[in-house]
Image 1 (cartoon, rainbow, N blue to C red):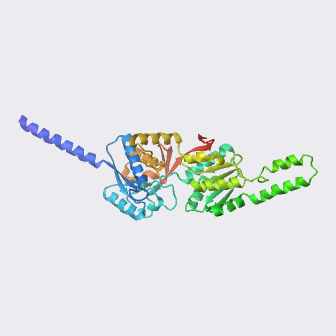
Image 2 (tube, rainbow, N blue to C red):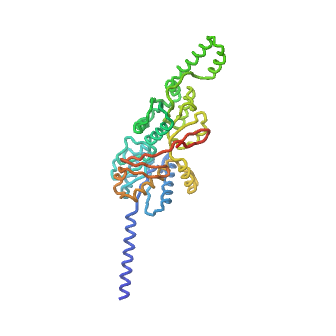
Image 3 (cartoon, helix red, strand yellow):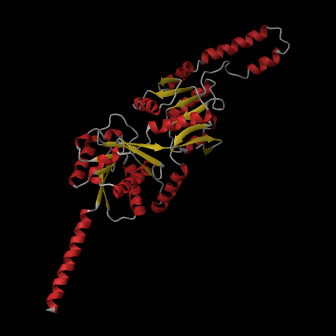
Length: 384
């Protein structure tokens, strides 16, 4: 009898352990990852994968399973990989990275994609933009305007494929812009356009006229006055206090240099641009300093860079920080909600504090509360 009871007990224990194991397998949280693993952007894809693995290590939960798939930065490949994720039981995906990879993903209604793009216009209904979008940036710039009492701003927008995205961000943020100008980033056309925007030729002529007037006058101090005027390039005020340059890299430098050429200087007009991800090359551009821009929290970003370097002996791409935070966001939401209805979760108003800062989630959109910085004397300084 005792032997029989032991056998029954053994069977029950094994059935219990088997059932517990099966339940654990069923409860495992599967998260897809759509990144470029081949092609010109494959290094970025690898950086994102490493960031997600680092996030899992920090969360320390064995029930998270990441399933990476290649997009090759192409929409057809992204669709094929997304369908494979669907077959593997995934319902939420981090990625794709680039806007052009999103075009076909609306066909897979069962999946929700947290894309790293900062574009918000014309997205499929099941794609949520998680990048640092223009609305988040202009809301931060608006806060700076209120802090400094800036009333008149001109806005320089390049004629590129993100032109309408920028205009939408201005509209949604309700930032007050005095005048908007589109410019051609072609250097051969840019300078003439900036001359027109800043009334450079008129102001230059004003200076020449004033010098000639004083020369013909009987003013006893005219030589001193003429000498002072000859040290200037133009004469006459500008009817704006700040200029927003919605550009990056060499184009940003070209526009800023053209402004300097037309005697618009950053020591008397605020030069403001968009998120530069703490581009260290701008520290060397002393002629266009101080230069202001919104961005994520710099200290958090540096701590993340150091953590990543300690783990992998290399520095991460800035987009990998987004993926690190998105993994944390998904895990946070899973503790409070049933992830089987992901779309409903992202329609609810909620917030999440990550390495970037605070995410605000509402109506299938993610906005970010950003900080504001200036580059001055070769240093990046926090304003708020």
